Amino acid sequence: MNYAVLIPMIVFLILIFFIGYWSSRKLASSSNFISDYFLGGRELGGFVLAMTMVATYGSASSFLGGPGTAYTMGFGWVLLAMTQVVTGYFVLMILGKKFAIMARRYGAVTMIDFLKARYNSKAVVLLSALSIIIFLFSAMAAQWIGGARLIESLTGLSYNSALFLFAVSVLVYVTIGGFRAVALTDAVQGAVMLVGTAILLIAVIITGGGIPTIVQDLINENPNLVTPYGAEGDLSAAYVSSFWILVGVGVVGLPQIAVRAMSYKNSRSMHRALIIGTLVTGIIMLNMHLIGVFARPILPGIDVGDKVIPLIALETLPPWLAGIVLAAPMAAIMSTVDSLLLIVSSSIVRDVYLNYIKPEAELKTIKRISFGVTAMLGIGVFLLALDPPDLLIFLNLFAFGGLEAAFVWPIVLGLYWKWGNKYGAIASMVTGIGTYVALHFYNQAYGNLFGVHTVTFPVLLSLVAFIAFSLLIGRKAYDYSV
Image 1 (cartoon, rainbow, N blue to C red):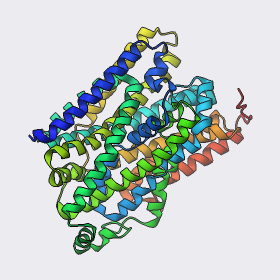
Image 2: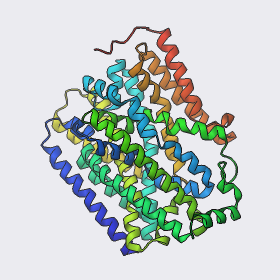
Image 3: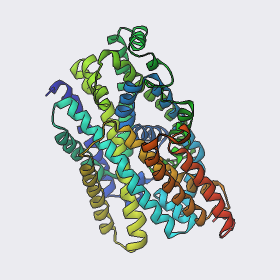
Image 4: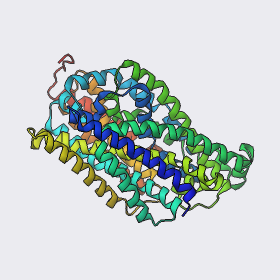
């Protein structure tokens, strides 16, 4: 066990626990538990908003799975990954002021709160909650697996022991601290990610003998590694361009991202977050995926791609610095896990329990159930993560695609199209989810239909369904002034 690596990691975790404890003290004195626990009281400034979006979006797939896939596929995956640079900018531009204004008007604390108020439909609420629970379970499992593999690589512990250690660490501070702990720790974690990725990229380039030498080594091994088409030539132009729907346009429909567009303090904070978030996302994504490709000549033959980052850090950096740098992927994983836990927890507590089971529940009961549901969800995901796949990025992207197919049009057209109604929203969600799951299994068996990413057709078909059913059934213009 490498204690020189572990000590900086432990110091980082202690800092995170301290922030969670401070947040729980502030939460205890809150007069509005629901808003504070799930939205941080809508008090996020520009820097914190940008960092919490970056840290939440930059997950285990960005810091472990993405570089691992880049290690396997070469520069083609780096090109594909860079389509994510404008994601935060795009989300805040589309949702931005209008989403926040309407959310405040409705008193919405969750994305489903907004959908409930906009469409006034129990079916929309229950479909939304079910989609979040199913698909975010997959996303959370990916993060749990990433955290466990990181700890496994650093400590030599078994995968199951590392998974248990990671799960306990996250559950303690998320359960007690709520969204405020998540947002504040995300600000710390985002800064750690930015610095850590820069240090590691420099170290990898130096160890590899410089970029020209590394590129030549890649060409000598397989010339396809330095082309846009991947090591096996299977990254077609159609797939790469359609992938932007998944990591660009469709991100508007991710509940964990959308909820952040409700939580900023004022317009100035949002505008600042647009700039900071775009720059930080671009730097982190480019650095991490380049590290994955550049690691291949230095450490050939890594069998599990998700271990590339911890192994290359241990290879190229002094142990104490490796511990600090590896706090970056740990930060990314923890920040995404905490956000996803709260999204699923709020779906169950706020959107199902308080809406349809016990609307008159007392604050004490709400607190107890919120803490309990968050803890139980974590335990459930822990059990799901006991049997991990080889590359967790594909588990994470499956969850992303399902959520986007379900939510992107009910959110966007609910904001901007007055003819959108509950029939269109229900049809869009059912069509999106149904076709996404069907195409996922079809593509696994026979290859991608027309060479495009799985999410492409469900997003297009759900748009058609939304417009058609809204116009054909119950056509009535929505009054946005209400």
